[in-house]
Image 1 (cartoon, rainbow, N blue to C red):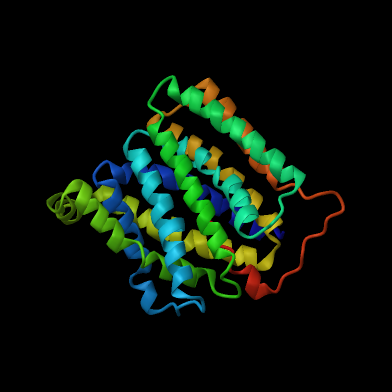
Image 2: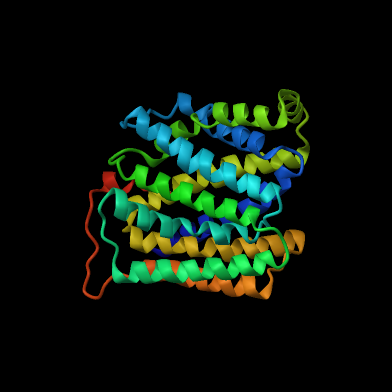
Length: 302
């Protein structure tokens, strides 16, 4: 990878790591489900009027919107609203890679390699250590919600594999249009219609700054740059940069909020990241499969 492209990949990882701090700031003033609806409404509008609809079925677009966007971020926002630290959330969310491997094996008959199975096992051990460490200082409910968010992301990743040869940005924008209505309906059922309308009518400056960061930088800029890199290089050369997201998130949360993980949480996080890294190891002598540029562009990283 060229140095400028490597720098771009690292920059995207930094944006995504800091994004959890931005989410935490916004959640102080906006109910979580309302915040998710607002974020994806602004991702979709006005871009949906200028970005052509990707040449995939509405079922694929709806599936991506419901699992990769609404399911993943709805659960993450709820977890953080109920006490999941901004620094720990991106670490646990890396469980998505293990779920993706297992779901692809079941649904697409993609046989996992020995390294991938070892990585899944190590990741499970890491999650258990994080859970034990977290359970010693706080309820486990928020952590389990982030694990479920990783499961939702894994389902979304599997759905995205059926969308080949289309624009990654188009998938992001059009699938985002699926999110606001069900999120607002769910928020109205949970919070009450008056609370939803009141929170949207009285957004504070920190909430607006948080929203714009998640929309412009984390979603539109981050996804566009990531898909551009995946269109130029094999996935194996780009995907490892996601390993930078958890340490950046931990550092950002430490600087912004003074969050310091418990020793067992930190140990579990290291084991989990080691498991993620193990799943990226190719068997000796294996050669990456060359794919047309149009097909490579479809890879969407949450």
